[in-house]
Length: 337
Image 1 (cartoon, rainbow, N blue to C red):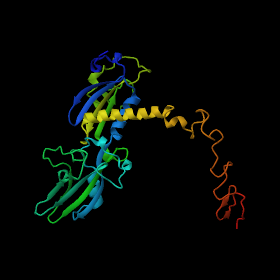
Image 2: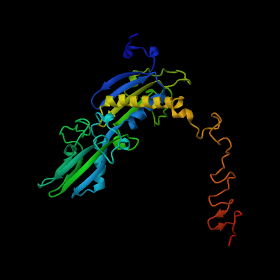
Image 3: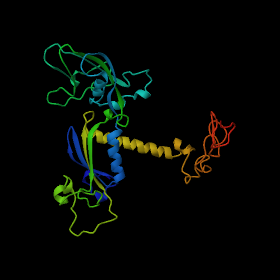
Image 4: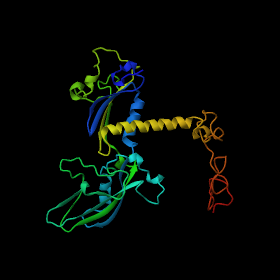
């Protein structure tokens, strides 16, 4: 049966429903309904920290006569957003067969600037030039979106000062470092009228004046005067505001976040099935789960790797034995002087 999910009524939808209210090159706003809070928050967390992008990870400085330290410059370079189009085809450096880095797992960029005039020279992201082989002609290129076409400011040089360096950009996720974050911010909101009382509003006189309604308040019915509180109500409409940092378009962050979440769920299902490694798992488990792992049920919480009595030490003997002899707090092989 053919149907248009955007035109379906929420009560008839077979799963989560997405309604996009705004979409441009830097921001996308959408409503997610027919979903639970845990699912919506999982999508938000994945979009924040688990979408792969590319960022400068290694900096080899050949010449630096500026006033900035090498470490400070390297840190600034790592935070410059790089175009991540086609990053899926790039290998993680830990999974690549090369010794250090190659065109299959990295992008090389160079920067060489020297001030020869009396005016202050600004070195910006546009001065970072990709060199060598790349998967495509856009991957690893610095993102430049300002009207002047300069990009992020890296440093300023006075007459006679010079900077020359080589950068190695690698694939990664924001869980490892914030420089790989694809989004600048992700707004997440539900229940704009606070019907569920999940938010305790601090106010001095009038909460309605001191806490103006959000832009999504018009999307839902406000509470009626004297309306009884529904203790069984749960949120099912969530409003997202995704802003990109430049590496990926805002809509691509949403789609990639859904893909990553699907892969994580598929991996969980696979491991829980007999086909996955999880079917043969025989490690420590909760005592209530299938009798626990090997030896778990017999452990009462005081067993050490050196004995079952709980008072055995790595030096042998019981209780007070130390490498220097016996302490007054236990009988060992020697005597306390």
